[in-house]
Length: 434
Image 1 (cartoon, rainbow, N blue to C red):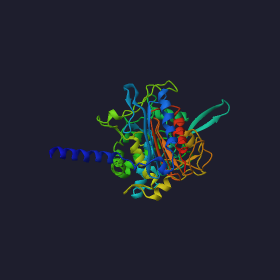
Image 2 (tube, rainbow, N blue to C red):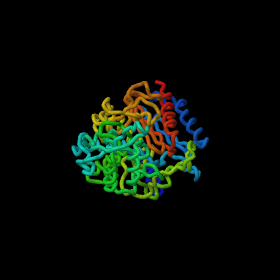
Image 3 (tube, one colour):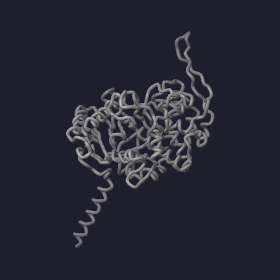
Image 4 (tube, rainbow, N blue to C red):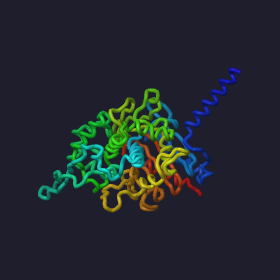
């Protein structure tokens, strides 16, 4: 009897584990209009890249019509230790943190605690009166000089969500005074990219508010520290730390078991590690340390997650704000977030698609790149699909028309990231046979 009870308890435990790990109901590709043989091309292509030493490994998950039809791991979680990649591997998702924080902000809009048109200074007074770094061409000496001017209007919450606040990244900005000011403030580091985890939230706001803007608010789309500032706005409006808000309102609601801003010691063995150097450039690869709580939660680059965690999140968006009986956002809010938020009044020198995929054809919504039409872009896809990626090689997209949700996770930085995103995307769409 005792033995039988033990077996029963074991069976219940296994069932609970399986249920917890299950992202979506599984199905054969053929049952949702896709080809198993054609999907297998993804594995063939990625394994060849692993074998050539170009990436350490990857996890790919693809769902169609609400059913998981592809879930494969390739290569190594940590090549130096000969540790194989597994489906439960945890990745530093860097800029794929931005959509999480964008959703957090829109939750607060739905709570009546934020409005998109609110000035950021309502929540962060230090941003009340900003200066703008203005470039001018010195024709006599054929050089660019810089001066400063007062911001013609305040940045808004909407500006933060769509990257039109005038903020910049030191790693990307071409504005020399802004780049230097970010470096002097300790926000842009030349030793490791996209890492300001050593600054408290208050320090980050105080220092960043003293850095001149790269553009007048609302004038130019430039990928920036806007999502980090948005995280501070979320904290001010919600009255709690960003990680705590996301954990309670998003991660736990969707069963994103490993999504967090740092990892306890028992989860560190599951953390994916990059190659020592980037095969494309020969430069050493340095990623953020997530083994201890940060001084502040970076809304732009600080989170970690598994592929299944992020698939849950993306599926929620695909379903108009819910997964199963868990509703996170209204359908109307998701529609707003995934619409064109740039229009014709905002300059876009480098388009979101060019930054993410190396191709035009995409505008920006409230936290995502959004495809403008079936053509123009040099990659498969549909009008209205939305997506984003991360510095360390991660990528996801949602295609409402084809009812596809896909996540690609790797820890491979460098200039080849757009190539891998296009590869996985193209090979997913060529597998559609209905």
